[in-house]
Image: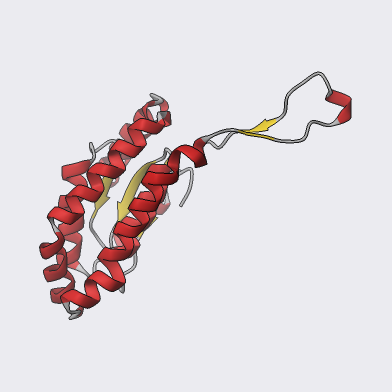
Length: 186
C-alpha cells in the first residue's frame, strides 16, 4: 500500500469513529456476534491456512488459536454491556452537591501489528477487545504468514465495513509508513 492509500484509509476510519456509531454497545455486540459466526464458518480454511504457514495440525490450530479467539468472543459478547457502564465513584467532600463517576470511553483509531508465530490468534484477539471497547481498527498482518493473512482478511471483509476494521498486508515498508501516521492507540 502506498502512503496516500494509507492516509485515505486512516482518514476514513477516523471519520467513522467520529460519527459516534461505535459508541452504541448494541452495535459493538452485533459486530462481535457476526465475527464469531464467520470464524465458525471459516474454521476449516483457518486450520488449513495455519497448517500451510506453520505446520500446525487442526487440533493444535483450534487449541492454540481458533478456540482461544472464539472463547474471547463469547466472553466479550457476554460482558461488553457491563464493561461499558459508567461506575459511581466517591465524591470528595468539597464537591458534596455533585455526582462523581467513571465512564469508559474508546481510544479511537487503533493500529494492531500482529506477529507471525500465532497469526490468527494475535490478529483477531486484539480486534475483539478493540471492537468491544468501541474503537475502529487497522490491522497490519505479518508478511511471514501469507496463507493465514488471506483468511483473516477475508473474515474481516465479510464482517466489518472497511472504515470500521481494515487489514493491510506488507512488510517493512508498510510498517514504516503506518508508524508515521497518528493513531490513538497502537
